[in-house]
Image (cartoon, rainbow, N blue to C red):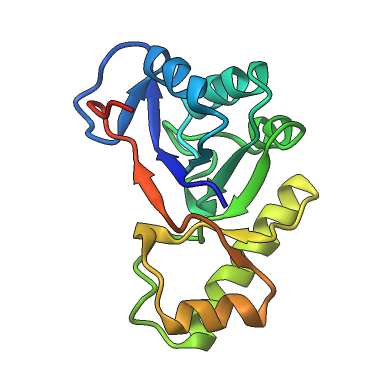
Length: 166
């Protein structure tokens, strides 16, 4: 599997948020599409335009949805996510975006199943991928994902910061 480039917030102009990228930077990153897979976390509103850029380059992005963020200020709506899902892969990124590493297997299963149910109810699609919150993976998270047939996506990550150069 290809290494994964992980993104969060996109904007037209440079942003002080360290996990941001401009659309121009992302356009340059897309020139490496044969070397990397692409992952967007959290469902920031700016990801809509970045998804369009990726589609223009025939790149499938895995978009991790934190369900409690959807429809809040600065984040995507369910309508936008339904549109994105026509061209990209929607994935589970939990309900509340909390650290799950200290939770029991049953608690993790509950959180991830709830997120899957919410995503399916609002998009008609049930995720098969889990993008770990905070990129934390331990044995309980692995076992919980196995129990509910979620594949963990995003090992071998390179987080894209506002000053990252490829």
